[in-house]
Image 1: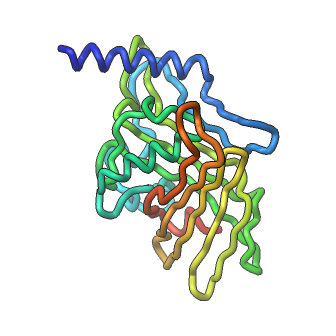
Image 2: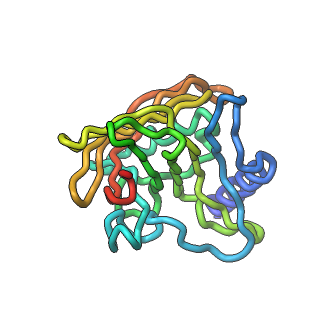
Image 3: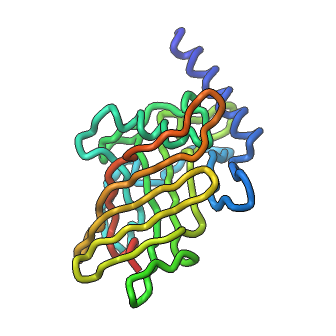
Length: 224
């Protein structure tokens, strides 16, 4: 009973924050990041491979979503996710997040990395969306469906690809910090590691940095 009351209080605080912050966290004119939750009225829906599937189910034409996860499913993954969001959100406002690629909580990745013929990234045609499906996501509170916490960049900062070795690196950077994807790809899957370095933090925290996790996505969806 106590747990239920605490859960309802947390959802109420979370919903209030969602409505008051209107899901945007832009620091200044140099920022290209948008971070926050949105709310929907009605019933829950799917919305990501964290909701009962894996990153490589189907084909490239039917599944453009990838995953950020911990290959060892370590509890440290949740700590890293909360450290990452501390640039724009009090980590205590985030529920539990699993590093297991098959769990219902986790982190979904939607991204496009566009390179020119010389292997240089085309920043304006590259983008990234991270959806964090924590334990609060898709719960209904007073008619509102709590959505995943999302971090998106409409364009990248810099990057390169070596089409001979099939390795790449892409950086997204703004006033809050930077996110770096380092990986390799074959004829099917692109995978590697996501790093972050926050330049700022919400009140009560220090700017964090480290490894967010491993990532995996269909190469034909990610690499252009």
